[in-house]
Amino acid sequence: MVKVMVYHIGGDNPRANTALKLVRSGLAEAVRTIPRGVLVLDPYAKLPVSRSDATIVSSNGILVVDASWRRLRLPRKGLKRRLPLLLAANPVNFGRPFILSSAEALAASLYIAGFRDEARRVLSVFKWGPAFFMVNAKLLSAYEGRDAYGVISVECRLLREVVGVEMGDCGPESLTSLYKNIVSRYIDEGK
Image (cartoon, rainbow, N blue to C red):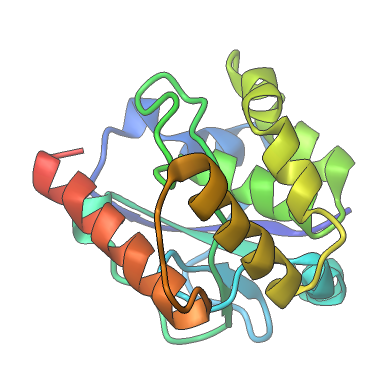
């Protein structure tokens, strides 16, 4: 079984906090320091999580930094990966791209890296958990089994064809810049 970890910073509603619910349910471990070699989910990382990360996740685990988007301070340790384009299924941000709960981020990363059962287990404690996989079925299927640059290629195609975003040179840097702008807008809106 994959080691799932939560580095809790706080700043949001503890009763609605999905990462803390995972810890209370025994599906994740709260950590005070970032373990060496762990895969850290970082919304500003250049490379997305991919099947190529399976060995790291299997041997060292995966960690989500649990904090309000407004107070997100990321640790310097760990192998950093971001999520590719996905939609939230949680009641707070349903249907919004990129703004996933901590539990959704963990589940998506596990799924893309090839740990489907663990991904489903992570979201099993939420009523809306199955909806995440239904809403993102095509996206997860498109990303699954690809390396980081394969995931980026799929993201670029989806942004052009589905979302209508035209990007001249669609690559790691341009996607990271686009996602930073989207997250900044959500923060400015108070989400």
